Length: 334
View 1 (cartoon, rainbow, N blue to C red):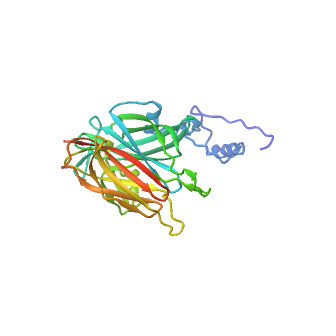
View 2 (cartoon, rainbow, N blue to C red):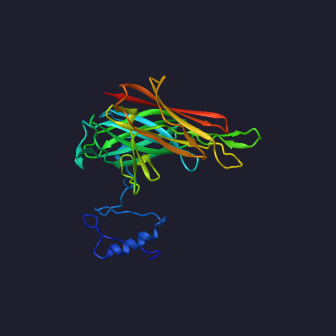
View 3 (spheres, helix red, strand yellow):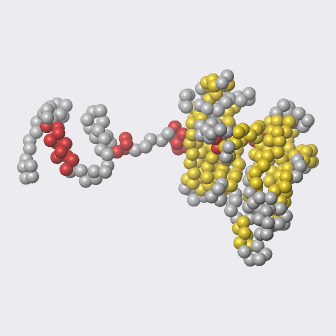
């Protein structure tokens, strides 16, 4: 065909004569410069435009570009150290479910929402994104709770988290400024060597700690799965007198005795009324390992007066001669 000429008659629908399309396709294929690109043809027989092939925003991504507040939402964040030395931000999103489409699961009212979160660093670049569809239970107060997790470096971020009602389309976005702690600090020991600085993660006020047979990535609290257990978090530490709670914590990089290879530390948890007056104190928990995780409870709250409290954890590292203090709010309602 080289050097030749073809004159082809097309019908009003722009179709070539029967049997000719294969010949034309072979000629067209010879003109393709990038055979690794998939040229898609629509139902009308025409090439699909590139803009129509690009990934489309999910409903959650669209919410972040055009924020809405169709129902009330609030954010809570906590932090833990992960295996690679980085920090895990564990977020909890609370939303009012009154305006959302509801369903039933196991006799409980539920909502199906797409929960997403984005962390933007000080340079304006997105440092983390997560999105997951889940079906949380609607609580007695008419709200739902859903968790998310982001792996972030230490620093300051603008955190945005939102939920989209999968069935009804309503959506809301919440925002907060957060500072991610550094759990991998180093310092110079008296002998001139560099050693890790002991740190403690957030205190988690939880309704319970559930044992799991297998991870469930679609569970509303999947972000709070640690090994073979799942924490059932309390939003804002707000509970009722009829409830019982547990307090979970982790400690990292305690100083080790070079002769025994053991740490020499002790952790003590105290509940302070209005953040000042001690009203309860757990037995001291001795720690002999570099890393430790523990919990206090379950603790019935019937004996406590309604009001605001502070849960305070003190970890004394005797070898490093340091005391670490971490606190979390606890509010008991009638």
